[in-house]
Each structure stands twice: as structure tokens, then as C-alpha cells.
Length: 333
Image 1 (tube, rainbow, N blue to C red):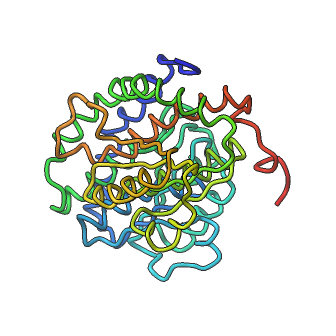
Image 2 (image 1 turned 120 degrees about the vertical axis):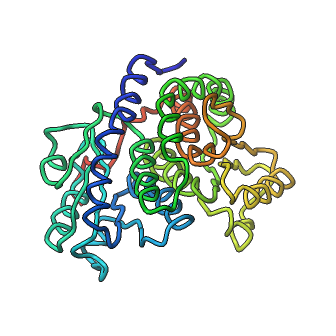
Image 3 (image 1 turned 60 degrees about the vertical axis):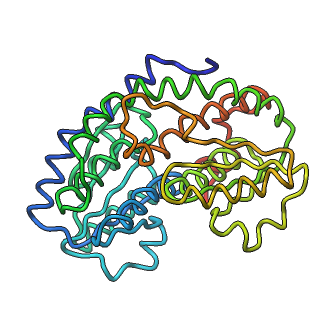
């Protein structure tokens, strides 16, 4: 596959699964001590990437869990922040300035801070109260956040089948390699067809809304300098549908949680009024070894793996490096 190092991919993925004992021990200690609320704090892609786990908590738990933009949290504050708050941070490099300032802010207000990152010597790892380290550049953080969230809810009696689910996650590295292989040919076709397309309309729902936002802003806009519109599938019919024309490129992410019917409506409408519809449907992937009742929880990881193939093929077809930036970490702002 184009720009896919299977050995490195497996090594990074296995390092996230290997954190299970540490995550379980940490969550068990926190549960015993008592948790009043949880903040999932991020910036840019890491902010969007925690939305599925806020969504998961809202579906199953009475524990207050919310996502927060690091810079806004510092500026606006949060009345719920204090003793008994657990603030969770994710950062691949462990150097994101907004996240680091938010760690300081949360600690100053009495929260216990947890950091998932790939670098043990990074500023984030040294600043948080509890650091859980995977292999460098291990992205995304879905396995870690799934283990953390489901263990926490399981301890509260709000998620059943945790041990079975966590056991099945051990096969995720190999499963995601198969997802990448299956997604590669359609991704190549998409990139060839759309190498000159400058505008894409993206939509998703439920635990795929965060990834939809992330792929629109952090990949197509930041890494490919393409124009996009992104809208939650439940809001699609409240304004944004007026932008759809017969040549509009729509990239639609359809998952397997309870919001799937909302995306069915969007897909049906899109196919009626545009001939440029691409659907990334997590149900198309076998995910052998994952029980049916858990498949929906993995939709963000499946979508990320499949769409990463689109990214690599766009990079080639458009001759535009995914590492090229005009402003981000290039100029002062």
C-alpha cells in the first residue's frame, strides 16, 4: 500500500493496546477515590477526537463528562472544575501549547490530570499527574480512550461486558491493517477522481461526528489546503443542504451506533441530488473477532484508518505533502 509501513503501524497500535493494565489500574484507583466529573480536554484534532467518548458517556452514564477546548477552558473557566475532577489530555507530541497551559490551569483548580502521549520526556508527560505513554507518533488515541471510558463506566455499573470487550481489543492492530487494505483501492479511486476538486462537503453523526470535524479541518483544510463544509448529520436538513448541487463532492461517514438512521437520510438525499457522493461506512468492514454489540464503539477508529488511505492518495495525486503548512507552528499567532 502507498505510504503504509505495516511493521511500524502494528508496533504503534500494539503499544496502545498494551496500556490496558495501566489504564485499568489507574481507573480503579480513581473510582475508589471518587470522581465528581470528567473533562476531556484537547486542541484542534485532539479536541474533536474526544467527542466520541463524551458521546459514549452521555449515552450510558450519569457521570458528568464533557469535552473542552483547551484555550477556551482557560479563558472562560468551568464552574465544575475542582477537587474530584479528572482532566484527560491527549497529545501525540506532548508539546501542544494550548494543552500544556490547560494542564497548568486544571491542576491549579484542583483537578487530577491524565495525559496520553507518545513521548515520555515531553512537557505534557512531565506536567500531568498520570502519564500513559505509547509508541511515538501513535495516533489515534481511540483504544486508550475506549479502555479508559468503558472501564470507568463498568466500575460504575453502567457498561456491561467490559472484560470481553477489552479482550477483543487486543486484536485491533491486525484488524486495522485489514481495514487499511480494504480501504486502499476505494481511497485511490477517490483521490484520482478528486485530485482537482477544491471543495468537499462532509457529514457524520453520533460517535463519528468528531472524526468528521477532524477530517474536514485537520486533514483536508490544514494538510491539503482544500475548502470544506462540515455539518452534523442531524443538522443537515436545517440549512446546509442548500449547498448541495449535482457536482458537489460529499464525503459522508456512516457508523454503527444508534444514530445510523440519521446518516441514512443524509446518504439518500445526497445520492438523489449529487453524482459525487462518497460514503465511508464502517459496516462494510468485517472486523473479525469483534462482537456485534461492540462494533459501533469502534467506528471512529475504523473511519480514521479507512480515511487515512484517502489522505495518502490525495497527497500523491495532488503532489501536496501532508506535512506542508503555511502558518501552523510556522508563524507566531
